Every structure is written in C-alpha cells, then in structure tokens.
Length: 143
Image (cartoon, rainbow, N blue to C red; front, side, top):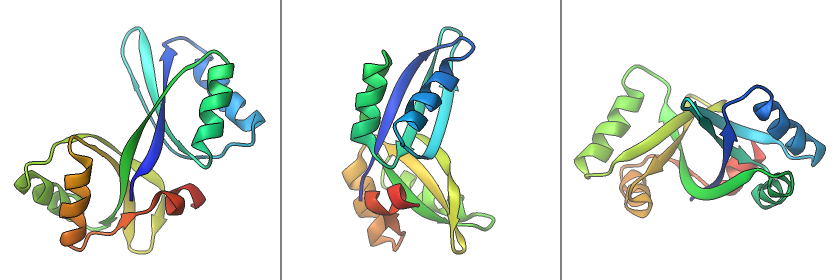
C-alpha cells in the first residue's frame, strides 16, 4: 500500500525543470503526480512515475541528484470537510503529516491525495481500520 516517489534536487535556475521532463519523456516515462517546492537556491521535485527504477537510472545518468522514498495515496472524500476528517483521524493517532499534494486524477467521488507521514506503517494501519481506501502502488502507477 506504499507508493514509491522519487525526489530530484534541482538548482533554482531556468530550464532545469524542462531538462528533467525532457529526460523522462525521452525514456518513455510517464509522470503520474508531481510536487515542486523551492528555496532561493534549489528546488525539490517530487514525482510519482510509471517506472521509478528506470526514471532514477536515466535521471542519474543525466547528472541529476535523485532520491527515493515511500508515500501513501489515499482516496479522500471530495466534499467540504473530507480532508479535515482524515487529518483529524491522523492527529488523534499522533501521526504527523510531513507533506502532501494532490494527485492529477479523480477516482469516483473521491479525490486522490499523496501523503508523506512520519510513521508510514502506523498511518496505513490507522487509515485502513477507519475504512479509508489506501491505494496500492500499482494502482497509482497505472492511472
């Protein structure tokens, strides 16, 4: 129920994001979700792609600094308070959300949101016990 995410560290200068996407496109890698955060000197591009091992290889070969970690994709009720209910549940269990970002696609009446937790296994257990649908990596990569 964990999703592999890659993180690319980029200099904060014109064209670097275009280089990453061109490298992935040339390798036939499809981006499923992304988040970009920046500081004055560098940015962190977080990606979920359809083939993370291949993406890491081609990006490293292209001179990019690439890391990987695990995140969780949840179906969140797409109505007022849907996200709030999930965050209250996590807070009640003492689980910290390190960051989150919306997924590019919807699933039925729910939005899909990517979460990074401080205690990923505890978060998955808490969420599934509460009836929250946690997507499998294969589901996310295929969307």
